[in-house]
Length: 245
Image (cartoon, rainbow, N blue to C red; front, side):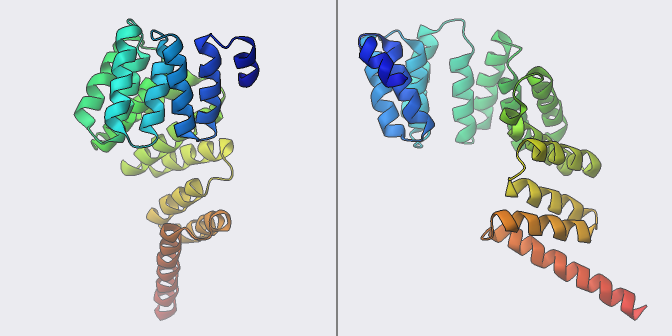
């Protein structure tokens, strides 16, 4: 479809933007960058292309160039929260939490109904070990996202579950891991997280079952392998104690 647009409307920036978006989606970021730039050459005030241009740099860990593109989009797209959100996400990616928080708060003030902003603010709070605030932000994101395709929000379910686990609220953590599993049933990380949460509660049989499920999907996951070994050792110790009694 994108190439058909180029053939029909070769002088329209949206045509080359569509080609760039295609390459971006298949993770050919240098090709995507080339076509985002082509779109900008045709219409330098086409803000979506500047945002895509920034994304193509961010995905290759070229943060300075990404931020320059997002700043340009901010100037061209006045009144939009999207470039500010992108700058916040980029600062979060590079672990500059104070700057990330500042840009995300600005984005939230402009558009208080975008669930992605609250998700990213939740991540900032989580990384800052403010788990109470992270819980509020993740719940807000899910509330605003209700009615959308929920598989898109799998990371929010997982992050909310992580947050509850950090707070020692294991039942709530298991609930949100299971909700994440309902939209991503083949995710080994979710099975490992469920196993670890049950492990922390001393539910060794369940923990071992979930670790095995995770390794059935991703057999070479060293973290899950180590957790499984620990759970098996703990289970053997429990059997030894019962035998002594």
